[in-house]
Amino acid sequence: VQLVESGGGLVQAGGSLRLSCVLSASFSLFNGMGWYRQAPGKQRELVAAITSTGRPIYADSVKGRFTFSRDNAKNTMYLQMRSLKAEDTAVYYCNANLSGYECWGQGTQVTVSS
Image (cartoon, rainbow, N blue to C red; front, side, top):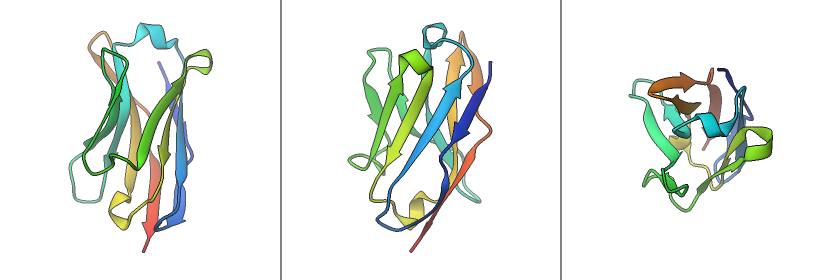
């Protein structure tokens, strides 16, 4: 299973970006999926995820600014990021759980200049 991300880049504070992650297999095979990020010198943290109910959950730091969505027909999930802050700077990874096996994208850099 491959996860291929795109959409990162450099943006000014207050700007927006949309990350995409294309999975090489159908969403129906996966138990869960989400977005994580890792800033320099910090641990990887959960940004947003889809729960078993199908409703997204968000880290407190991104609530109201980030939106997780997916297109089942395209096997693609998205992370729409608005009102970006300097502290959102990190490498963003998409993740999908395949029967207990964690699958990761290659990561995409998001840099927010203040």
